[in-house]
Length: 365
Ligand SMILES: [Zn+2]
Image: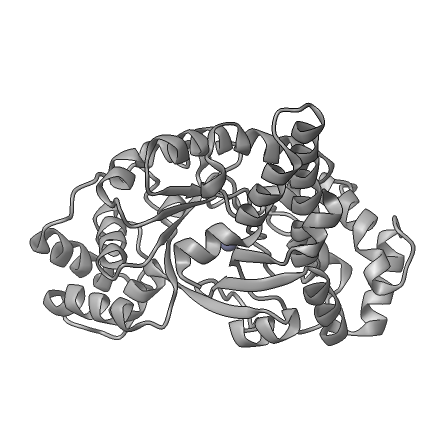
């Protein structure tokens, strides 16, 4: 089963750019987990599930033995240079398509075109909704014209999907109702009066989702774990059920989901337009990722589970996410076939759906 999955290119439906420059140890550790910076003195981010997984699987791609020590690994990385390292890991990921969220760029990172070229894959763009609204506000558009301008920019964007980061701001408890024009204008006015416009108003998050729905774009929602700005108390996808229901038949793509992946799997089963993945968590859980993948596949229909890496910054994460996902899914499918729970033929068909078929169908890519 693993060999079969290794022969299947993956569609990575949620990822970001990687840095095109060399990194020192502190910078590398800071990008390895969702923690802010490195650990306190005496704590290394290499001593984590993702750190161990990285040392197990990434050194051979740079011609080192598995389990290389962090300093030896980083020395080899520096010797090869960022361009060569990025090329090797993106190639090793075995991708056929990428959907790149271009809305988070704390510093210069590779754009979708460059990522796609390195991966030998088709690259598509995902438009980050809050970013569009913040740009419109920063451009000084009149509050009364805000809604039309945002709608026009989203509809005119050359993207295959949209993404909401409501979970990072107002939280996921968004009602299913469309906000009224007066509500949007009022919220836009408050946004524009801020020195640096930052969408965090429930009305605007909802308005933006409806703009994407009206444009017919699948809407990705950040769900569950992320960096410390993602308030997990308000990041459970069950909070989003009214809006998920209201936006049907436009697809809602629940990203990451951990530790609420079972809740997400439930929503994927009961609501026709809900799809799920386990991006970010897959590489963060490292050796424990097979349990996560098996739990995601408890209730979620196999036609509604997608692959994503949520790689950001480090090219290693494209490779690690893909490798751990293939291993976890292969173990799950082979285990069921061995138990006689399903046939090897069914297992291969499901592998094809989850690897890329579901993403191709939902995004029309
Ligand atoms: Zn992401």
